[in-house]
Image (tube, rainbow over the protein chains, first blue to last red):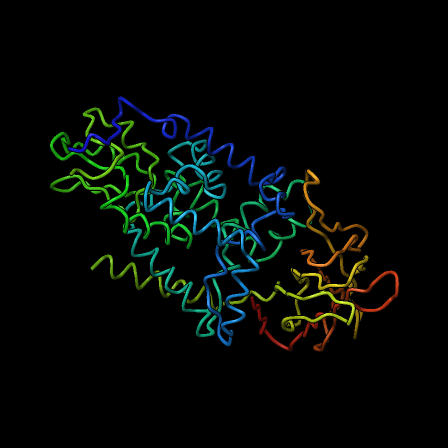
Length: 280
Length: 160
C-alpha cells in the first residue's frame, strides 16, 4: 500500500470543511452577491462564464464561428479546462466541493426529511449520463435541436437565487422551459437522495469531469477501497450521493461516478476507505 | 442489458427534449452598432399564445456609445414589458451597462447585455413580422433590429 494516503484518522481540510466550502461557493458565485462573476462585469454564468455551450457544434456552423464561441465564453473555457486538469490529478473536487450550481441542490436536499426523498440509485448513472451527453453533442450538430440552453443548470440555479430580487430573473421561470428547469432542480436535486441526481444524470460538465476522473484514476488521487480491510458491509454505498459504490462479491468504487465528497470514508468503521494514489 | 436499456431510454428522452419547442419563449442574439446593428438570426414564434418571452443577448460594436431604448414595433401593436439583468448587489468592480425605464444606459464598445422582452397580446396575434428595436436615445436612429416572426401554428423555433 502506498504511504501517500489519507485515512479517516487524518481527514483533510477539504473533507472537514466541505459544507462551509459549498456555502462559500454559493455566496461567491451566485446572486445576490455573485462577486466572482462581477470581476468580469457579469451577473451569471450566461455569456463569458458559460461552461456548456462552447464545445457544442451546431448545424451550419463555420469553424470560425465555433472558435469564436471559445473566445466569447473565455471564462467558461478556462473553468472547464481547469476543472478537467485538476480532476485528472486530484479527482472531482469541483463537483464535490466547489460547484455553486450543485451546492444548493445538495444542501437543500439535506433539509428535506428522508421520507420525502426520491432514490435514483437503481439507475445506472453512467449509461443515462453518456446517452444524454451524446445527444447533447450530436443533436445540435445534425439540426434536431439543442439541450444546451433549454435545460441548463448553470442558467437555472443562479436565476433561482436572483428571482426574489429581480423581475428579469423571475421571468426566466414564468415560461414552460423555466417551469421544466425548476421542476428538474427540485425533482433531481433537492428532493433526490443525496441531492446529486441532476449532477449525476444531466450535467454535461459533470459528465466530462467524470470521464477525466476515470482516465486519471490509475495515476491521480482518488477515493479508494482497501479490499483487505473492507468487510463488504455496504454502509458506504448507503451514503454515496452519486451511487458510485457497488457492493457485490466485493465492494468497488466506480470512478465514472465518484467524487471525493468522502462521505463513504466518514461512515467506514473499518478504515477501509482512503483518498490517495493507487497502491504501488 | 439494464445498462443498454437505460442508455436507449435516456437517448430517446434526450432527443425528444432537444427537438420539442414549447413556443412561448425564444433566445435572440444581436450586435448593436452605429450602422443599425445585426441580429444573428430572426426569431420564429407560433401565433395564438397569451404570453411570449424573448431573451435578447447582445454585444456592443465599436464605436457605438450611448443609451438605447428598447421597443417592439411593426404590425399589430403588442403590449410588452422589458426587464434587464443588473447585479442585485452591484460591487461596481467593472463597467457594465444598466437597464432602467426600458433603456440600456451607458453602453460602451464590447459591453454585453441581457434583456427580457415579455409580450402579452390582448387579442389573437396576426401572423407576421414584428421587430424588437433598439433606438439610440440621442439620435433616434435604430442601432439593432431583431425580427420576430409570428407564424400561423405551433412552429416556435429557438436557436442558439
